Image (cartoon, rainbow, N blue to C red; front, top):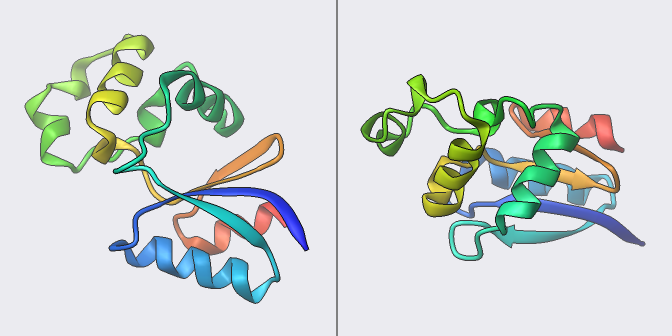
Length: 118
């Protein structure tokens, strides 16, 4: 069964692997984008933030514990455009996994959250 499901995926991340296993167990044929190597374009980041309901504050889809987040002083940045630019420049800032299915998306933390899309 072909699905319109895409996962922003990091193979070294246990949550990503658990999400992949959960999708496999539920018969979902997903595409996996290794976003650290193949960074989604800015327009796609903005679109997915909209699906997640955080376009006005993309910080919700960012990994605030990453050292680069602190180094860039992003905690005090209120401009959404600047936050999107930071994610394009430093894809490690993008939360993972993000599962996108059609016109809906969830951050798979915990991985069971992706069941909301099935």
